[in-house]
Length: 369
Image 1 (tube, rainbow, N blue to C red):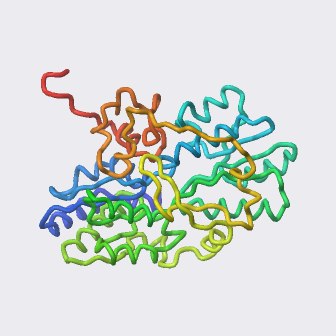
Image 2 (cartoon, one colour):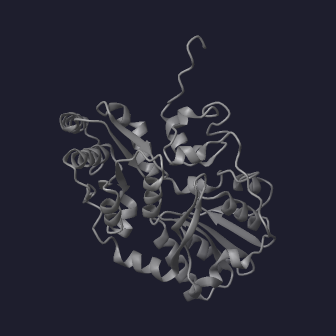
Image 3 (cartoon, one colour):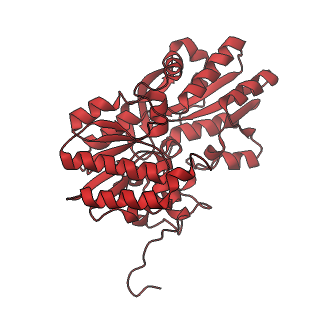
């Protein structure tokens, strides 16, 4: 397939690996912050092909994974309200809350529907004026423009039965939080190309300067990632700490201005809790006062929610790169894609799911079959 096979060329991959081996003179630790990039790295075995000393840490790059339990439990409480239709993308339905998930609620009679765009939810609200339609708006900056446009469209139509339950998270504050952690080992970042296609990379420049870390905006195919790693390692070897753009075919420095304008009109920055990590200041989006009427939190009072993670899940350590799935006793045994204990195993972009899909299993202790 044109413009896809070119980025999976094994000859070019070997050439990039050879050049990386020539450039590296000391150990370096890099973090990719996108779950899609994690899947490519693990599925293609890129992390196992890198020269000795070059290590990839998988960051909190899956918005489904970091959606807090409180939001999931709130969505489920709303879904059980009479006269309510809760809509979401399909990957959210199996993410476990404190006690159940949206898919199980649907099996028990709740009106939970999969949509392929927030505009589908707006259209549903227009067709069913006697029902309250709620869209679970989850994602990084990548999905924020579409969700903003849905709110703007609903406002233009004068809909009073459409709301959004917002749980948007922002990448730059999460990267800063990782760098400020006392046990941080990250020396360079691969930034998510799709996020930067929307927002550009100007927000990353102060991070690179303050923390003296290279940041390379990178695509999602094997050659994208190998070239991004090579660019980051070159900076490290040369003592540079700049923002570079490997994903030039899709990303501009200032991003997509129309998308950014829609986001800034509908949303404002707020503190946000990240599942397994905790609250990161200024790392989320919420609706502005102008569009408060479309806020499902205000529309539906579900009372106090007592949330609790599964005690055997170490999602927080996985999401921050402190541990890998192979360090979790439940991984591959009690926790599988069929019986997930935490979000990193449920989401198609979760690190645990990436490892499991790629067939990576823990090596049993000597003498254990």
